[in-house]
Length: 304
Image (cartoon, rainbow, N blue to C red; front, top):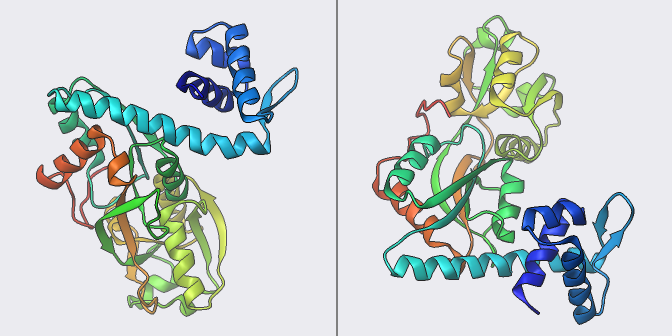
């Protein structure tokens, strides 16, 4: 099995199209097709279902994809490790992050990293914590700043950055604002909620807290960015349960502590592959985070 065969396979799987994958790889379409056929013969199984419009992975193809991505990520890390020993940090840093993550000023960290390592190409992807964890484990991202959603595995480890309680945000004229006291999930059960999509860290943390309390809630308005959530609460269309540092982003809203959630907290982490698979660029970024003063406290009001 040749590495180029795996590279070609992953490209076709990502593009779901032979012509587009060939253009991206800068190889002929006939050469790409021959490479995939050679890989299928070696494995004794078809990897794609081909139609006139697109190609999709077979069950065998889906099984191979994760392993192929990990192999290619390890090869890339090996090349970059040799370059690092020679005193030159180069290659690519593929970073993922949630919006408005606590514990790290992402923009400032990347700016400092670029100043120190100008030969490294930075790629940034913003997504929910669940998707980011999958992409780090699969080798598609070097590391990610996310909310802890699972225990460490053989493919994924976490470094804690910070933790904080969840807070209820509501309009100043809302009936809850008048009480001015900490609230329990039971007291919020009948409210209409504004919240993020289920893959987001704050949503997962809130769902966990309410499930632990045995309280069902109605998410009436579901959004995919922080400012839309704050706008909807600002129009008194619902309340939101969010990490405490969100209160700094819209000071006109009323913020009330959430109690009675046991040990449930919003914990942000850096997600990385196992140490032997961590790229030199990822290690350099983590070193800079730990020594460069670019971590933020939970209530830090960086505009990220």
